[in-house]
Length: 380
Image (cartoon, rainbow, N blue to C red):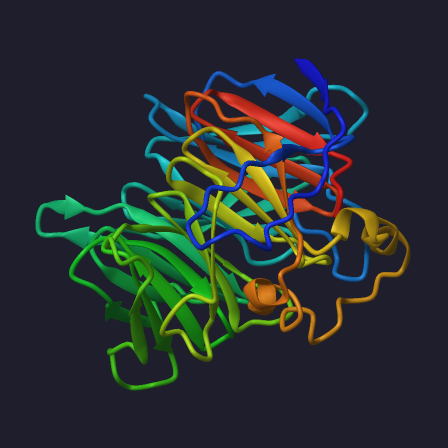
């Protein structure tokens, strides 16, 4: 275990930055980080959700592994007391775990490299497997990896290397719908609303889908990158659902207005390699978190978030951000010439960080260095 406290940081004036300029992150001020060696490559981490009306950070998270003779799912407990997270339960899993997604406070779904999706339930301090959908993704040669999942209430959407998109209901064994979404691998899927999803593929295309429509054709399709670089991460704004962030194989993060998705509103670059995961903060969506294959984890803050008392609001008010928050921040970033605070939560290293998740002022991330990093006292 290593305990880390960062030196003081500051803000970057990005008013003169041009699209595609590399923004150098500043070490975040006052964070605490616990680094725990776990002897397995981490493919995905997710905090166990807490009720919407509570501001208490989650103390449990799940992780999945990949590229091992016997992979596993693990349930962890972490209380931010200065100690390493404690493994409560380890469940063997033969294939690689590609994605984890919670559908309720107690149930999450796991997508694996053999094309399966399985539900798991928290029972006391254990994980119990439940409903399983076998070989949702396959080709003539056999099983195809299920690459990603998106959950919205009781519905799941999975995508895979076979180009299919499969709509599932957690209460039904039979898939609700199977769509031949692409002729290449689909890397990511993200719900915008219950019936509107966005997929991202290896060619750099973003496609929007209306799941209510009878047609199996997308409602729109745009190139996220002129270089046809794969889109490798998607994140939806928690209150302004039309605001979407994407990350690509060149380390570029794009902000999209899905009401007018022809071009990205903003392009940001701080990572030197593929963006592996993105997440808007649930209560303070002016903060965006990113992980990348260059081994770094960054926090992007619009305006003067770090000095405007949002941390105090997070812990005291419980109110949601104003409805026009996205309109005055991410969608007007270039026009407003605001300060953009790019903070380094984990410096670049030789191995990828594959996944991150945030719960209030805590972040957990992991990757190919076989270390789980637990960060607390985030500035949001």
